[in-house]
Image (tube, rainbow, N blue to C red; front, side, top):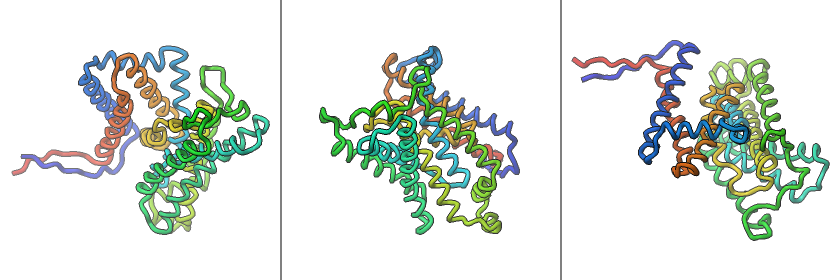
Length: 352
């Protein structure tokens, strides 16, 4: 008989961290291969199909980039909260609420010149996401409610608010639950590469800004100190409640921008399926990237490859649509499980 002993590691080198993470992703792909094999498809052929459909043509690459745009926004949203050890599981709801508020301006507001119209939509999307994130922030600060529960449950409320308008006052003329198409002034310009639009530039600019904010400013230091040690933060004179509230607002605003990028960049209308779980996938992106904004871009593209590839598997190889979701789930579980080996030495000791 053996017993398992866990010994806390003093530190983990970046090299060891990277090796363990890559090993976890490799194990996840093995599990995905087994799942695909059980569905009667050669997993190596399926993997090749995923890579080829995503990166084997200019169309595939452009569509992969298109899917990465909302993932960059939601990845940044989750990451900024994680830096303060706050779990924002509500990026999906904040995405929908930001998109809903921006759509309201398109429907009821005046049509402005394109640069001004898009500026207003971007601001309203960010405000919408921040408003929705302020609810769990206040619940945590005032009533010490766990933010994982509150942000998760509020996702469904935000989606149902959007549904109310889509099935009610904003219902299309053909009686289907989607709004009229946005005018050209409310659409992001294409960058000349497939459907890739200018919200990608906004996302990349925010990556740089947030990296500087987190690692090279006083506010970023306070943010990271709050996440590493509440006692140290209080000793340093940081207002913990104010910091938490501001982090939630910023996190929600970033998720709201993902909603605007979808309705004004791709869909040109609000409907029930503007997001295919981008808010939840953003959690995986942020976790894989260890909250580093630049690395978030890499893993946003990586997850986009899987999402685009999963679509092709459904069409070409008749696999279930849930294959992409299973891929993401297995990768997340593998990464979470790898944390054990990053923080502890696992030893097997024989019982006497």
